Length: 162
Image 1 (spheres, rainbow, N blue to C red):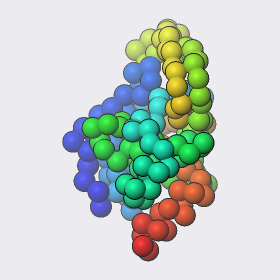
Image 2: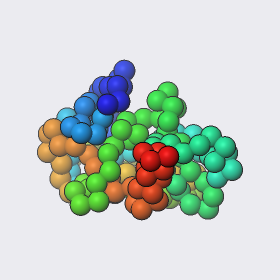
Image 3: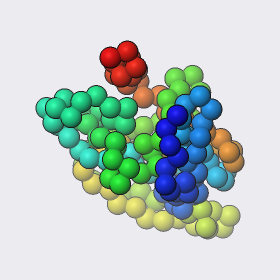
Image 4: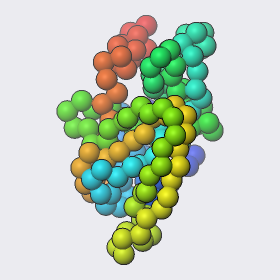
């Protein structure tokens, strides 16, 4: 089992609290520490942006997100990444969806502190990134799960059996 991150308490976009901790049979996982609304922008999958050549030289890892066009985000380094590196895979029970975006965008995000009163925060994003959104309302203590896709599963076979 992976060790629990030195930082267990995190916040998603808008200040919604998250907790990183043991997930049965999976090592660590990310859990909602409050109710999070459906369609909420949680934040970005953060890490080092690397081209395929650099990624192949570094070797296969379980914290890598392929963003296409020969580039990936490597979140192996806990100091260069965020809570999203601890999200576990589930094809059938996913409650988070990832969207690869490029270029500049602007959005308004519901604020946790103000959500009872309908408060919002402005957010500007730029560059290639992976945006994470809830697919439904999440309950307190619920694990955030993402379908990382077939390439991730194939790479895990290499890590496990290689």
